[in-house]
Length: 193
Picture 1 (cartoon, rainbow, N blue to C red):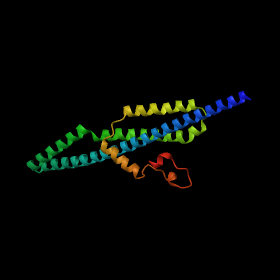
Picture 2 (cartoon, helix red, strand yellow):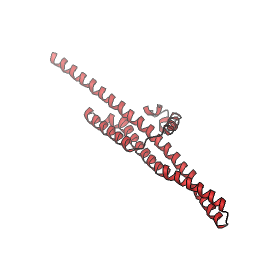
Picture 3 (tube, rainbow, N blue to C red):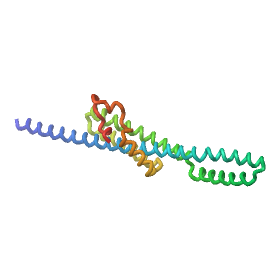
Picture 4 (tube, helix red, strand yellow):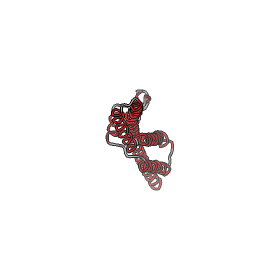
């Protein structure tokens, strides 16, 4: 009988340890999910601003180039010269800042972080509850952590203003899915952020 009691204590201790490990895996997956959400939204905000900047500088540059050329044909040398200087300055700004490339890099990084966020959410809300092995869960979590680190290293830095825009949007509920708003469905832990 003592042997059975000892076995029961060992089994209970193992269950407690296993559930504690699963809790920690779930908590870390939620951190990955939250971090990825902020990074994704920040990159999308930066991409939107750089795209708008590209349009705001590029369109006037084209229009002024055409007007400068037409002014030169009508022998309005002064107007043509001033407009040509403005076009050259705008062109230099476009070349130096390269907003189109910046927008593209931020948009791509935003999509990668968004993908990681979805994978982390599915892992946290579904896979962690189906998989009984703590070792398998820990290994999968390590894969997501590695993926996040590689994204950090390969992505452009999110400007502070883009992060603040993303944060305000998230706090305003832009990151909550309609399904998470319904009272009869279980709310995602991340939706409260």
